[in-house]
Image (cartoon, rainbow, N blue to C red; front, top):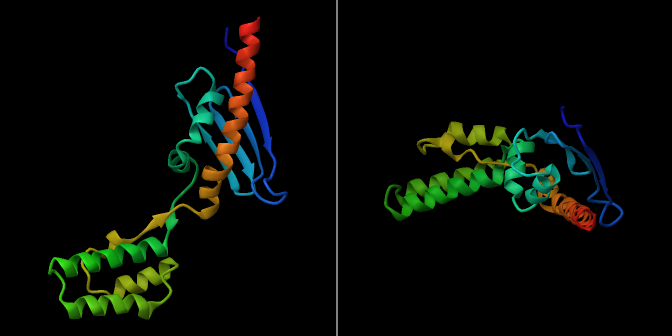
Length: 175
């Protein structure tokens, strides 16, 4: 006989009456869905390696990057891109691959473009630079709201789940 699917719903209130609220739906098949002020996310884990899916979800709070890989899509990051370019210029200057003049010209190019906060700025830099393998400098990151979901809201859900599971374990032991 097929086991009945269990559903759980959790409402996490905002921390300051404004930010950090979420409504979560979980089920025993591994379905996870969240409607929050940090965005809406869903994922299905077919194999979660725990007796109870809630145990698995509670453990996700320890691995924010794991959950981000499952629920969010990385997008272009101007900050990461500029950091990679500058690190490369400095490294190549140190090891002598770039002359002082070449390094200065490339460093100034970043300033000349000014707006690398979007892919159009990256494309302009890409078209004007003389650095090789420029596509490798394209930086990506998760949206700040997705990071907040994983690092702020998921730990609060995890605490609720742990308390609930502990209460259920005590009831089961008592019976």
